[in-house]
Length: 186
Image (spheres, rainbow, N blue to C red):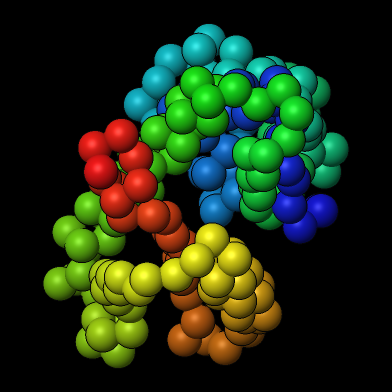
């Protein structure tokens, strides 16, 4: 599996649907599944799930899993570990980028709320290893880009552990100019 994909504008539009983002997330984190399994997992109907799977496949985000299935059951898997976005490319529109990022932010918010709700049920050694911290530093655009790239490198250098105490650990990196500092409200 390739490590990441950078979608073109058509792919970005396809990912701008919240159900497709959720489906892709489940396939990446939980592994291959059928439309029926995904529909049950996400509380959707199978027809709608199949439609969204076809859209994701059309844009190369998912693919058939040939090692599974019986011919009647079609299994899908993520084609990449991650999606990387570069919004400076030709053909990107502000509306497409905003639609995509809004759905990503909503998905991250849902995941974060779930993590907080489950915190008290975690084993003691896991309760204090995460963070919901924020920092604000005054930077130039170049310094901000350098900071983000350095953080990305640190995260990408982390390696999966085979230790029995290891568990999936989510890291969301959100870095942006403080709202209202540079925009029309400032």
